[in-house]
Length: 265
Image 1 (tube, rainbow, N blue to C red):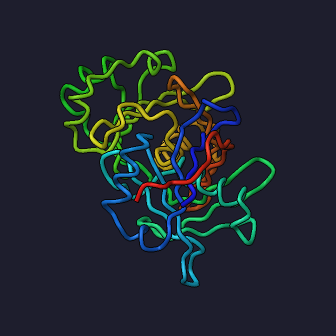
Image 2 (image 1 turned 120 degrees about the vertical axis):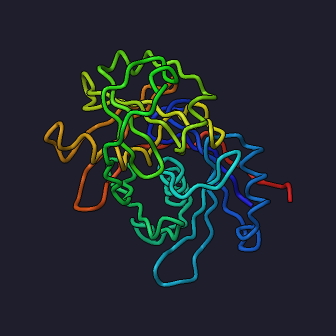
Image 3 (image 1 turned 60 degrees about the horizontal axis):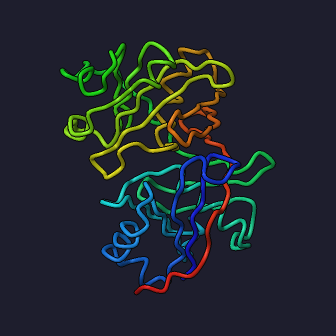
């Protein structure tokens, strides 16, 4: 079985967010324990498994696993998978449809890179959890729940960079991830960092799925429908965000850093 490591939301190797991409045979694609073992072995924040889909509604089935669990939605591993399928000549057109736990998602190829068509996750404002400031080491201004994530707005980009979370306290919150965000400076309209220790990812380098909530959150505040988000992890990465009705188009580049054969069964 072919396996790849792809850096997503970047055009430079060893930047952005690395994802495993595995192209298993159909039998292995139904073996959840085996896929979880592969993801745990690779130890990237996500490993994607793509297999040709026999139905008319999609071209490939796609599942995503952290080192600890399967998740419902992952942006950077979807971008990485599309990058591999396009690059390996396994896509018949410039658009791929994926059957996933979040419905049918599509990825298109254009001169700007890969564009993902994902559902928007408009966040709803919620009360600030007690001890959230203590957990993050910074003072939250506003808090909203978007999908499985908690968005935490802080005062500035400098405050986002200064976050030094207590990961045990973050993991105890009833959310997949805590996304700390603020208005950006320079080329970025907004910035963020993402912490998901409850699913085995202390800090995610670049989180595509979080932008399904970050886009709807910042669009009315910035009066923009098309934005650029920068994730301020140590590796760093950039996500193009465009709101189209109840969908979010996420765009970015990717680069393959490793490819080979998976021989362990």
